[in-house]
Amino acid sequence: MAERRLFALLGLLALLSALFLGWELREPAGFILSLRAVKLASLLVVGAAIGAATVMFQTVAANRLLTPGIVGFDALFVFLQTGLVLLLGGAGFATLPDLAKFGAELLCMLLAGVALFGVMLRRGAEDVLRLVLTGVILGVFLRGLSGFAGRLLDPSEYSIVQLASFATFGAVDSTQLAIAAAVLVVALTGARLLAPALDAAALGRTTARAIGLPFDRIALLALVIVSACVAASTALVGPITFLGLLAASLAHTVLRTWRHALLIPGAAIISASILVAGQFVFERLLGQQSTLAVIVECVGGLLFLFLVLRKSRP
Image (cartoon, rainbow, N blue to C red; front, side, top):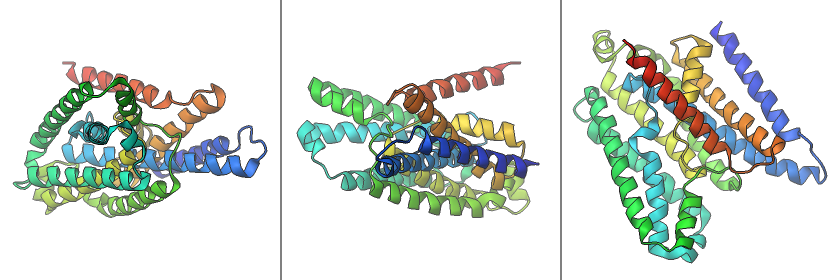
């Protein structure tokens, strides 16, 4: 039954993708179609990366209220943008090679995630709660540094930081997209191989170790995959914190299964569908260009509050 629902979700995503590509297609059709294809691919890559990463992160953390963004990836991205503008100035930041900037951001966030997870879990995966709290504190610290640095910038340079700090799908470079897609393929392949172990890990550390699962090693591998997915999506378009929470919650609700072999691709498909559908509505029907990320964050934030309040009921 869950497999049928997964295929139905995949069919829905294919339909949404066809609508996104073909809606009111005019001449020069080939040129317009190529632009739309790049944007569609970026929506699919970012959505799949965030959705899959969130399911894995929630399993390791044993908490469905968390997202990978809570450990400070978005704050690190904003800090990198602010630091570059502060050091190079607005003109220097604008003349940075896009591919070099993307590669540096991807590498910094990937290394930061691996370092955080590796150091915090060196004594065992019972430190997951401490890891999350440390990530939250680091995120607050980096946001504070970014805010302080922003006060040293003139208004025109600060506007550059603001523009670079919000997720946008309007001008995605095809080379950067190819790199992010390659990272995603490798990460999802690893997630697929880890799926049976994650099924056992979802039982809890004590139970999983009692049945012979090397929980600490599985948790670290899963978090490395999470780091790769979030780093690739954030470096490509910018941070989208609550999209994963929305997708993971819908995946659990729609698929009604504990099998990560279905939950991970299900969350990836749902997350990509949300982005494609949202971009189609705002761009094709409403004529808007930069509203999608704000709306997704708003809906995801409301869902987070709802889940927290529901959990807090006696």
